[in-house]
Structure formats: structure tokens, C-alpha cells
Amino acid sequence: MRAERHRTTGGLAVDLAATQDDDHAELHRLFCAVVAADEGYPQHPDRPVPFEDFAAYWLTPATATVVARVDGELAGAYTMKPNGVGRAAHVANAGYIVAAGHRGRGVGELLVRHSMQEARRLGFDAMQFNFVFEQNPARRLYERLGFEVVGRVPDVIDGQAVLIYWRRL
Image (cartoon, rainbow, N blue to C red):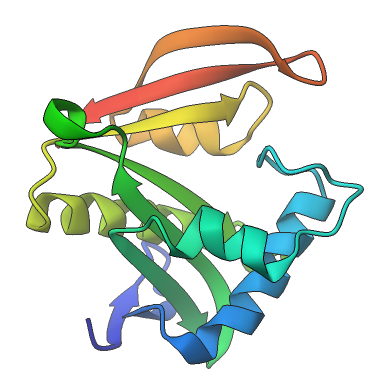
């Protein structure tokens, strides 16, 4: 996927492109910042995430990874892979990150909408998010875009429950 210009619902110009090797270091730094701020990933916020661990979590298993740039600056990204194997591989799983300075500008919504289109293009017929922290503000976005809570798992990380979201594509 070559870089494509998109606009958020508020009109912000965002360039989306498949993640390239040149993006890895910057993407790793953004992921580490999100983890350190304890904003929704299971990695421990007090421990650095080595690049190898990040790559095995975000890059290696992915069917698609996409970066979002605003005026050349990394604003966010998503990773997508099958949620299961074999007969369960028709359901996609995705994870998103948005840089703190770009939140509230529609970048997250653009990433989720784009990932849904990309998932359909890749042959997935549904999407599932397995570990959405109950206090994650992105829940409002997921629900607005038609995802429904299909499960709640208590006490997953530090006493916090997680929700499982699902949506047919």
C-alpha cells in the first residue's frame, strides 16, 4: 500500500501507508510511550519494551500494519492479524496507537475505519478486540462504529477488567 491521503471527519489531512522498515524505530518509540503511560497494552508500564518484543507483538504476526502521518510526523498506527487460526482465521484482530499530541483530532477514528476496510479487502468478515481495558476512552469510538461488547473478563491486569469487542464487517 502506497501512501494515501485521507481526511478525518474534522478535515485533518492524514497520510496512511503500509509500515516500512524505515518506520520501525519511530513506531517502536511511540508504542513504548503508550505503554509507559499505561494506556491500554498489557506490557508493564515500568519496564522498557525491547525492540525485539515490540516487533514480535506488533510487526511479525501482522497481516497488515499501517502508519498515519500528519505533515510527516508519526501520528498513529495500527496492526492487524487473524484473531485465531484455522477455521477461526476469518476474524481479524487489530491494535491501535495514537500519539498524545494527535488525540482528539480524528486520527484514531480514521485508523479504525481504515482497518475495517483493509480487513474486508484481505478477506476477513468480522473484527474482534480481545483486551480493551474497561477505562479505555476508545470504547466510545468502538461502540459508535458498531462494535459490541461480547464479553467481560474481570481482574486481567492489575485488578482491571477487560472487554471483548466484536463487529461483523
